[in-house]
Image (cartoon, rainbow, N blue to C red):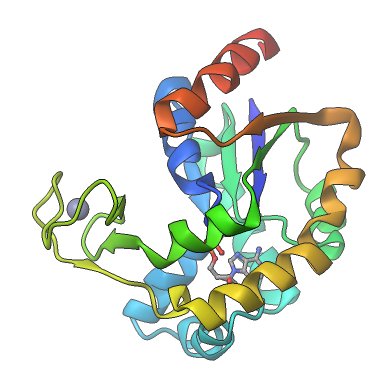
Length: 206
Ligand code: ADP
Ligand code: ZN
């Protein structure tokens, strides 16, 4: 089962994608995570991506598409995958059609005010990437691996506002593009609650 996770920055795409990946035993492919990994390892891609990411802009389509195309060729994607953060505009969506067939697109809907609040309180584990919010978990170490929690450079309020604008302009048109294939879900209080209808829906796809 090949799935795309669509939604604004901070809507909870990553958390939901992890739940799906776990239940349906498919890899979770997050382009944001791939870029952050490259930045950490100071690769050529990382150097190019960092400046753009910190400004809340998108990384170039050319680089991003190549990364995803190569990743989907790996063995673990044979039985499916969940894409989180890709495609992010129409150029990427059209390119994706050349190397993958998508079964379902999950759209996570969360109001803007809620998004700002969530992102600014978001913390991630430096070691395993687990995501927390200071509202529900206000500690310095990761519950899972003990790694240090940090705030992403692009999670500062000004950058968040810009990322939301980029989302509306470039990514939101994908909702129309995938209209025949989309499953809409409203972000609820907890990740588990939000995930419930998605799990049922995806169980019906196969
Ligand atoms: P969020 O969904 O919270 O914005 P991500 O981790 O998905 O966070 O992305 C972080 C940043 O990485 C984006 O703001 C963008 O700069 C870059 N990025 C991620 N995916 C893509 C993509 N498909 N195309 C271009 N840039 C991307
Ligand atoms: Zn951790």
